[in-house]
Length: 131
Length: 391
Image (tube, rainbow over all chains, first blue to last red; front, side):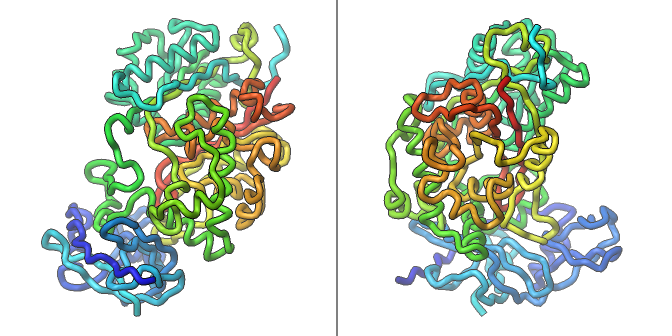
């Protein structure tokens, strides 16, 4: 059995003063992570506050865009699609969709790579395809 | 006065019988369950000096409900909100408030009517408010309550070899109990085959792995020992309580455990008892996988072994090692306002009193437990645990 993932148009991420720089990164094709400069540790979702120290000594760094499926589910229905957590090769695990795939062939541990998809607004959304 | 061993007692409990409240408002339901719990306790509204409610109460915190119910003697008020676990956490907070002398008789209410309102609780993409910082990183992916719990199930299956058939045993146990509950929304006994052959909602969770959407509510009255001693109902002491919260941990995601891994040991530590001492457990069953995680986290079995623990009737009263959710739980009985913590405590109180249905009542219910989980197991949630002692 094969079930092709529905080509869903995602909702545009809502902009806030906190995530503006991250969404600008998306527009430039960059998938940004937060980096705590106090500890050197990466984090997701990116914000101007370190979730490790609570300081604002943070910067935003571009992820390589490679990783593997940590967990996944297929939302069934007329327009089936996959909601997954992907563990990035840099460390953080991120909520995402696995797109352009056979939903019946997905497995935990499969290698994936970044692909932006246009949303219903002006900010594209980082998603993943099988590598 | 008989000697009282615990710092506070659940002296009143009431579950609204409705499952579809087209003709009642949410405020009305709150008031009806409050009145029901007072009648059960043998107390009156003028005895209440502490009020606890959560996000389901209409209005700012509990202010509109205090007004609606005409409560004028409140000197302690707590609107701790962590979804369906709120009311289990409220029990612990009420005990602490009583110990601290802040109130004598605490009322906790829950009510809602998502069924009458046509809510798609588990399968609609829902926002929790304005300016929620995580949502720009989640809503574009159209995550739902169902797909996020399904992610948890997917990882549990991958790490521990848990199967769909094992998850199905949780539903089978709940339905076996629900057949004796005249108010249960789904009183039909189902088989493992029924569950795994029901339509897939969010892989690997089937329709029958998901709880019901229902209207109604419930209320509890927690009182100090001196007051409990004067009342006629069986003495149900709160012996242990704990609360804990879990989130995405900056991207350090680990879906194999719930916050019950922390709230459980807190409650057991306070109570000075072990999981093996517990005769009955109410376990939050938004989905079958939710129960699997909590059983492990509360110490009823080793991490990764709950699939084996529940199979072949492990949770069925009179059959298994740990009778659970003898009212049918959220999976079959009731999940009022999409918040199952209140009904978890209420059925634990029924068991503790020896007032569960005779077909599912456990023998010698000297120690029972209720665990609530609220929020989404796959993103952010809180857990509350209480251990009740029958005196």
